[in-house]
Length: 223
Image (cartoon, rainbow, N blue to C red; front, side, top):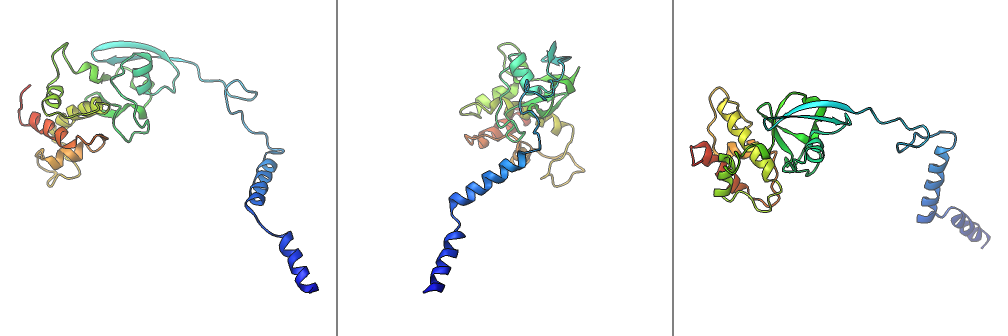
């Protein structure tokens, strides 16, 4: 009986519960801070580094020169949307994975959320707002309308900018991952178009119509 009582006491002393684990973890975290001052977590707190000084950058956007004074950490996407009110370029994932923020820089498409505005001084930038000529749609815009290449429309500006660049890349003879013979000019099959547009996500899944619009224009469809 005495041995059973001793075992019961030992079980009680060392019984581990969810509460004891949480308490131990909290205590360990608190102890780790003692004697180890942490950096300030926000500007204005003692020890915080001051924000960088604003910089002035000139951008060539849609045929116009824009001069902006902004935080050097400002992305090109935020410069377009927040400083120039060019909100056609959309902020989707903000991590370079959805393509909604695609713009054309010096003839090539990029994700504007992954680059800083100050990196593009004097570059030639084209956004969705610069493709049309007044009320006359760009041929790619017209093709998207003709083939119903959109539903909610959120990804459409990035899709169209990317599609315009795809035709330019194809014209220059650039191969893609699915090009069978990289030594020849690739044919813009549905598989080629889908591969080249794979960086632009459409959550409405209008992909067949997007491919049809691009192929139509590539084959000399109506303007």
